[in-house]
Image (cartoon, rainbow, N blue to C red; front, side, top):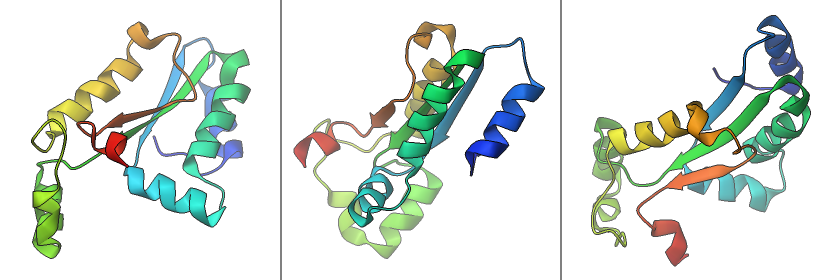
Length: 130
């Protein structure tokens, strides 16, 4: 589910009362940084707002921000920017789509019942270098 404004989200939340709801949005980490630098309303801000407002309705909201991924889309991006494939990732390789999916699965599971309003960066340590 992609949320674009808080009114749509709260309307959705009211329609599924009685169940624990989880909202997970995936976006590239560089998009988060860009929007913060520009001072614009960010997806991160929206998710934190949903996390606070959704608490009363047992709603948790988080972001998964994948780094360089060895997927069809990632390989296509590398064709346009050959240096992308040579980016030094601390774990020594690009991630897989499955690794991102497992992060999302964790956030959707009851194992993350106490996690909300967070950004889970799945980038093999690349963001730690910046």
